[in-house]
Amino acid sequence: MKILIIEDEKWTAKDLRNTLLSIEPSAEIIGIFDSVAGTVTFLQTQPAIDLIFSDIQLTDGQSFEIFEQININCPIVFCTAYNEYALKAFDTMGIDYILKPFKRADIADALKKYHAFERQFKQIDLTALSQLLQPPATSPSAPPTSIIIHQGEKIVPIPIKEIAFFFVEDSYVFSYTFGKKKHLVNQTMSELEDKFTPNFFRANRQFLVHRTAIDHASQYFHRKLLVHLKVDFSEKILVNKQKSTAFLQWLATN
Image (tube, rainbow, N blue to C red; front, side, top):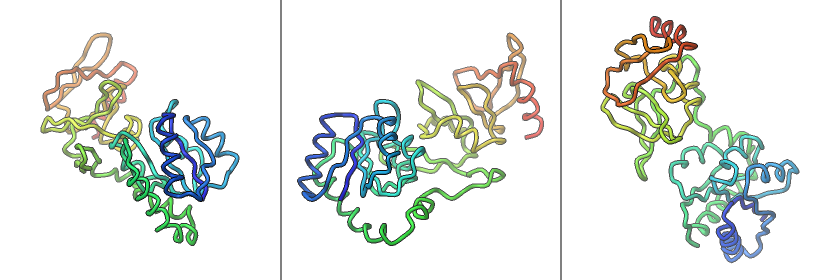
């Protein structure tokens, strides 16, 4: 059994390696990598791998970037200190999600799960399996009706019709509902814009606004537009002059 470890904390990587070998003495750890770039370079050599244990936050990005660049045909166990990536982890070939600090029992359970699926992995088309693990494809003309948000250990769907806008704060993306509730969103603004246009408009880098949340717009300094919402919010939402025409056209047709 050949195992690849992707982990940027040296002590954690060493502990994981020792734990794996204590549980599975016949296993071979074929490499330990701490970065997206280094792992991609290694995987481009097409090494034989049976199982990957991967952290999510690495020295130069998230491990999801690896699996976007390289077609992985083996299961992955994600080990991370953050629980907000669970849904995205299972969009890949993820079969388990372990929160740090992990226990020996967590690793043992992950290996049991791997062995339980091992025969199926060998018998089926793994590319097809990867496609099955992806969320259902959505037509551009029919955007998703809900978005997944995280509340502690809970994964909760919030109907899009309840969201007034999405916004960026301290590099994190949040939704803000008509009920004045703020939720962390595990997607980028660009991903949200792609999914929810034309119901939402990207007013600027910080705000993506739902049409039904807008009461009206008014002229602002330097030919910008000020968006007035139907829901109270402390920050101004401005549309710069380069987007003003497109915004007004969108406002008139949606």
